[in-house]
Length: 365
Image 1 (spheres, one colour):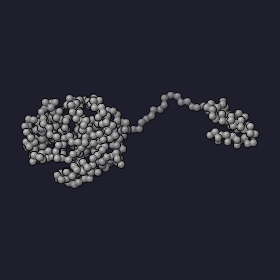
Image 2: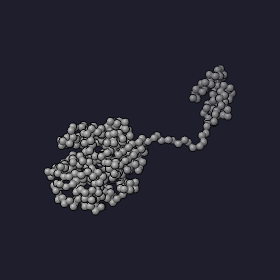
Image 3: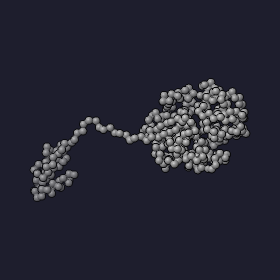
Image 4: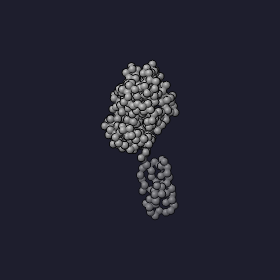
């Protein structure tokens, strides 16, 4: 700017002598370089440049607040009432991690535990929680569902039997009444655990009890329940004075599966993909924090959700932590292929769905 100003000045004055030109150029440079300049902004000895130097505008008062962009709503239907295995969801909500990702997350508990996947299929919610075995069965029925995240990557379901039922072994369960929430997964799990005893789900009387697993056992409406959560349900019952025996269903010939997964609508996945990725990022941050700060995490959870503040849940907390997925977005595609193949071999599904249509890691292109 200084070179151009001086050049323009030389052109304007034409044939003035060198001494005057040099002196005037120096004065011009001083005016341009000086923060204050002179009172009029004129170059001494020149009438060509008479533009005044204006004073800076001073803004007074508080600045306008920066309005954050509107948060993207994301509706999540739970599989059940809140339990310690939903810890990552609670921590992410309470520590503001969803908001930090630009999300407005709504967690809803179903009145009917069979409904959440149907809400996703109908695009009434963006995400829902369910189990991997149930996902396979629902997809085979034609629902456009796909796994996008995992909260618990190992089997949790158990068969819990009242001690008063007098079962010396599982071979004695024949003719007993077994309560369940989802019939098809219940039959699948029972067949897996009873196969070694030459029994199947057809050898027991099945009774749907929805959310009443604990109360049905406590009131002796059933002799056993299938699909209860390992570590938590047994402790809850024993805290109520109900003595039970637990048979973990993960220790069977059933292929390993993810117990608690997040499912989305496959047809609208691209539309909501960015929001779901940010949701999973928030869950991963929450899981890392609660693993590193287990005592603080339990304190936060029990205060945020007083219904979880029981001695049974507190006792189950260390076991719960070991079962949480450290990378909620990561998927083991081979696990889904193996389970799908098993279901086909057992005649429980009509056709084989490719693993990539059952589960995806949405954080990878």
